[in-house]
Length: 536
Image (cartoon, rainbow, N blue to C red; front, side, top):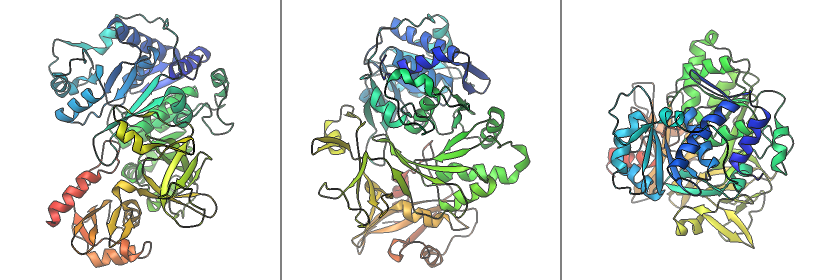
């Protein structure tokens, strides 16, 4: 047995076959049942000749099929590939080709775009579809998912696997085309999937056989609300399964606050994972409007990552759910989990300071470690269990994954400084920073200040070209009020928390801030919208 994701999962199945593994709408699966369904899918793919190193796309909203698809691929040493189900045909064709897909699983409603995008992909020979309520026509060469499972063997009789097998997750980042980040199973397990220490109490395991003994005393019922096509949701799912916990999936592909809050009570969820204010605010709105409709007594922690979780919104959460722990996670597809920040009481107005491990460092422009308390902003870097690189992108790989003094580092572009106490102060992504009059401004810091404004529901900050300043700070905001905000009033409001030069020099009111399905910022849209509206 190795640190292979399928091996590790199967060891949990054998130790806790009857424990609840997954709950999704009306489907409830024990570990043995989830394993059997994954075995059937794996055997179906094997019957098509799929195996070691083959890439199989998952173009699915959240459901048991996504988890089954990941596990089935691991079982035959294939590689599941996350596909953004919101992509248009041209974007899908790019991903199918770039990822070298041989097979695809998608919901029935996605078939028209999927089949059209796959038309010129000679390698892509199999499309399975999961039923939904779309009712779209099914092409003759597409097979129903449940039919494929029903006709395949449930046996677990697969060949030996390796901890060097690949895990790939495609990330769009903030600029450029999506890239596939390649990890070895052993590295992603220790970097992002808990490392056999789900409650961070005993440290990572030293041998695969130790995993079954690391089950927490209390059932770990966890609910990821972002789509599984995003890395963080996958990592939570696998971490939960490796802890013999229960994965709670409240709604297929829809952020339905009523279903999510009801599922917390019904399934006694301990942990819910969200993506910043965009998810936290509607949850708070519903709890405020109908506080007696939901049983939140089991909830211990709310974790967030990938987008701004402003202090004002955290305080609101903690007023509605006193005594809970809020966990801000720091990480990326290129680094795995890097650190966290805990908030346990109202009044949290700190900047994003994170406790990180010894494998983290901040490097200056010369590649040297930044001195604690110096105030120098450098690039956050991680060593140890890091990816192999980007799939079919050697030049991009060389930029992000570098060797320094004989050690390999992942440097994805997060800008940070080191506080005097050794904590890391995160400033934002270098690719989205704004250079205004020679000063570097990070959008996230300005957004956090603006989010506290009572008439701003959501906001994105971008830099647009300016003859005098090079770039100016522009805030696109969504408001519950019909009136447009006055620029000087907003600038005065910001000056209480950020320097004057960081305050927006232009405001653009929009009907709705555009975000990704996981509620992450869409800065490409925001910049184009700002330029179009301001006429620059």
